[in-house]
Amino acid sequence: MRRSFRPPTRLAAVVPAAVASALAVSACGPAPDAGLVVSDVGRNGVTVADTASVDDVVAATQRLGLTMLDPTTGGDTVGQCAPSDQVAPVNVVSPASLAVALAMLAEGAEGHTAQELDAALGATGTERTDAYNALIAAVGEYDGDPGVAQDDDLPERPVLHLADQVVLDDGFAAKQDYLDALAAAFGAGVQQADLSTQDGKAVLDAWVQKHSGGLIERSAIEPDPDLRLVLQNAVVLVAGWQTPMGDPFDAPFRLPDGTEVQAEAVGEGLHVARAEHDGWTAVRLPYTEGFHADVILPPEGEDPVPDDAVATALDAALTAAEPASVQVTMPTLDIATEPVDLCPALSAAGLGGLFTDPDLNGISDKDLVIQQAAQQAVLKVDGDGTVAAAVTEIGAAVTSAEIADDTFTVDRPYTLRIAHAPTGWPLFLASISDPRH
Image (cartoon, rainbow, N blue to C red; front, side, top):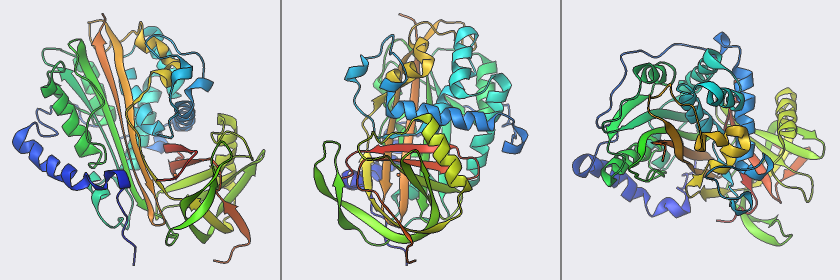
């Protein structure tokens, strides 16, 4: 029988409150979809097989994720960003969530901003739109109630919930073509709220709590009189390992400064793909279906985040490798990030102009600039499987993770990549320097 999947430690005390709060919202505040308006335009049916640019978009999403883990490697920060040496390290991100939010923004971008977004997102114009639409539809096969993240036991079949919406400030009129494009390609509805007040903030909070399965309690967007539009994306994965890894135990783990500590870990003899490239090693751990996690271990003493070339080479090698018997030992994880300002990562990805002089005239005739961009993430990994959630928000304002013949022991900083197996689309990336919790 499957063991109970424990909620993340730092969330354990608030899970009942989160559920109660979700029920109370409808009585004491806005319901998550209060005022939701759906375009008359139906969702376009696009499949991965129909779309030539999916591979390029998957590769671009990985580049975005690696830059999010270490924005200082991608270039200089500009505009409203803090200096790069003040950027706190981030250890859990969702490249897919950020990419979808940016793709929604790109539907209203023109001129140089459209070109910059297309470059960062891996495809141009309708090819970009169709590729993201197809990827969302591909993972949509596993859509379900994100509230299963609160259940004691993991579902037999993975649940991957992905949701999008746009919230417009009261009195702000976005162009209908833009709203129709979001509905057709992303299934995004529209809400109206006063984004200058706490009442508007409550609308954002309710949606975040609902579509993160209660794992993330509130929006990272702060009310502001100049805010006119907020794009929201949420992604939740709840999945059990194809082969559970047993009960936890203490195992040694070396911190970046060389100090050895004891961290909670799990281990099992597994039949999995294993690959090596340029001193890096990795294993691919399958979930019950549809998804896998790549655990990527660097050479001794190196930074745990691979560059794009190494990550791509390891992905290809793992895809080509025949499963073999490997004794896998790895830490359990229990991580919840505070809201992370995306400005440094976006700037490093060539999108700093979003914060200074973007051309977003496809959204509105008003001059808009990105004022706030943030992501929050939760990642829990143990011997049974994974619970993960992320919310990305972008606010536009008017201008002013058998007997073995081999071993794979994760005993030093490493990277975890969780991806949709059929397409390789990276849903979550984590850089783990200290797994204690």
